[in-house]
Length: 490
Image 1 (tube, one colour):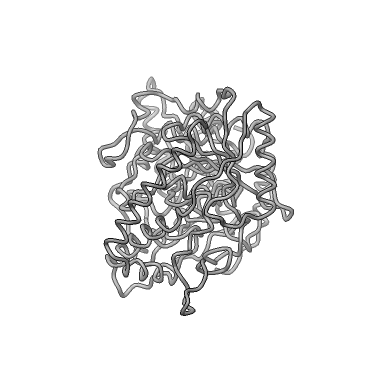
Image 2 (tube, rainbow, N blue to C red; image 1 turned 30 degrees about the horizontal axis):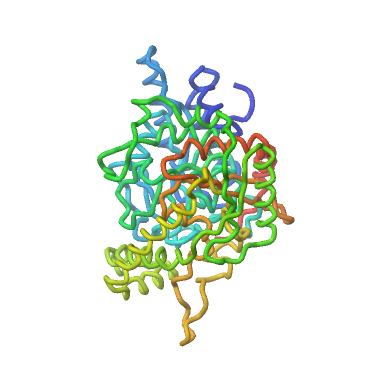
């Protein structure tokens, strides 16, 4: 097949491999060659799994030859990346931690098993922070994932490497996990699509103790996100919260839904969550998105959401961070910011944790009532533009005002993810997609959030925006110049 295979979408590449225009081996080699040629200047990867990827490509080709009449899977021959928080059998899984530097799981997570069963080829494990504790992807193993549009800046996190990999052409689908925006933040900062499904639609294994984490794809297009969801969705007994019929039983549904233009929708416009200050250019992008949707025939209305959610989120996540650190080898170094958060979490009482869980449930109910009569909410993905790589927050450290005694409060480390974590506290589906750039040329993401289990509506509206305001040309420009991105010191 002529042309650059690494520039194709997953939909296009799978069709080419299934038709015989190219082979899985050619697709895998194209991506691996691109990684080598560019030198991974923005640190997308902790581990590149070249040998495993080539072996998987050969196995796919052999399996198809031996079962000539069997239809190949919907991701046949598509190279993908997997966030290094997620277990992959036979491929090192560090969880962004020195403690996991030599860990090679025997069994993959359910989502990974489904992707491989559908014909996807894992080319590597992408950069994340230690245990996924923050919305920036720096760690003590390889340093931070850097923004492909400006490597001095962060790619976001904690699925930052996945956002970089998709933007740079290292596979059209990257997997991420999202406990407070960790799929959507890097999607916004890197100029790609990030989808957090309804809670439980994609099995999460091992089950996450805090009940906030979702498994979702980062892609170049809404169509690719829908295709990935076709494969990923459906119940599995290893996650008791999961629901729905697996793709092998129901056939594609989200891909078809994404291509159906939605009827007139009533959309709530949210310009503030927990009173976190919003950058002027982000506000401008939100206004542009509202005007676009209004021009497409939808009814938009400003709505105020209840505040105070962050105190519940921070307590729950800090307590879980403390439990994670307690289970580790104390002789192995831990990210300093994570250590501070875990120390705070260890001092929380059982009553404070129970209060936070009850507060989270009450907040989710308040949002449900606020969304009464609305099909979707439109809001920014992040209130800020990408900040310096290697820092934990826009302020360069842990957020929030100092305590009266002058010490820094670790409860503020995710406060700037205010527009994202509502989707985690409620379990609502949400997508980030790029809509324009800042004056400095950085992508700005806007977010659509729907009611629980209304994933098809979110994808359809996002696809409508994507058609009306195409972004593919900007990604092609990045693709063409990515080999000239300077490599920074770690």
